Image 1: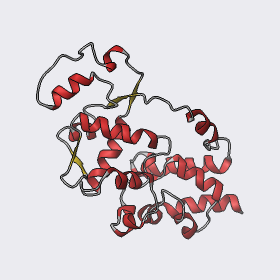
Image 2: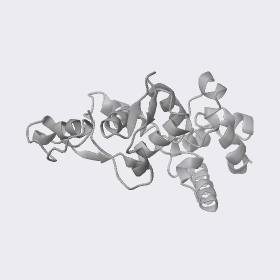
Image 3: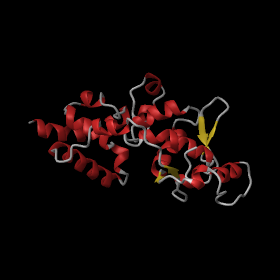
Image 4: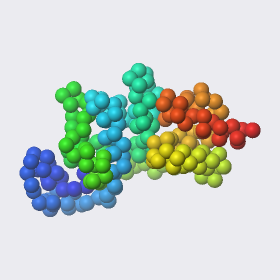
Length: 228
């Protein structure tokens, strides 16, 4: 359980009791780990669970959030949802921990067929009335190596910066968060692949049919400016 709170207190509250905030005996009390504010990831998760119909397991929901090209996703039209591709590659390693913490806190519940559905606390979190914090996952030995090999955002790359500027412009004009349009990981791929047509842009991870139709021309135009 990745919750940052006392494990015993969380479990007792789950069964309807009202225990003290800390028992003083569990590992979370005796050796507390650094805490991560996972509210934004949890909001993305709950939104995806809701928009996909509250019947799919975490594997499917995770693919939707990461914008994976998958036949099952496209058949159900889940690549046209606003939540398709909104989870960044940097946030992805925390998703399973957030699922477990969200379940422990009553934000998520399991269906009888093993899917995920919204729990009684989901509405408050989605409205920003409560937050979700998790204990920072213990880093694996190979984590530093993976981080070193990960492709960073190419700050200083004129095309990447131009794509980010276009995203900011569109987000402001439509009064939506920038990540709803495309995450940095998608813009990074655009800067590297330089797609000048909708067909080429649609082949990138995180670019679903709806996003391609809504934003594709704007971003292809930016790429074409640098290709000229």
